Length: 213
Image (tube, rainbow, N blue to C red; front, side, top):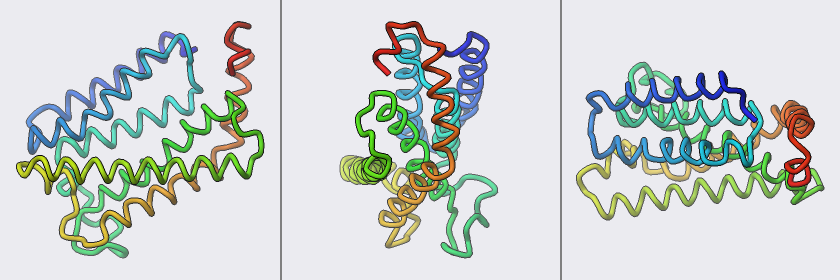
């Protein structure tokens, strides 16, 4: 379970960035669309904080992903300051902050999915577990692209800002590819550290929670 000061710190950072994001956003409708996943994610964590606490690593990763979402919501992904030169050696002539966001869209969900799968013992075999997690992240990324498409069809007002394609014809495919890379990088760099935190979490939980992990 998260300690009280950790919860306060997490909530303080989240609310501070959310407030900053909400002050004079570039487009209010786009801000709602982009910030909503972060707000919903925070509410889900709050709801399950006591009944199913997660590892400190995953809490920090979720907070970082929320920050990425809320910053993108404030400016729209095509206009985030200081990112006009980011990854221009791959994608020229565009603001590539959205590419950072889609990398995180694979990196962070991979660790969330891994935590659930490992603690519930769903897939004991490591290779199959990695295959499932990577497939889940690809599916999650594809579903998010479908949501963007549906929003664009339903609303012309902020469709371009929400999609963030910036005229790049392969934007959807490159977004999913970056989510794939993010999930693979997360699994191969954080798994051992994550396992230690899961074990420590199990030891600190009361008996009634250990049987569920």
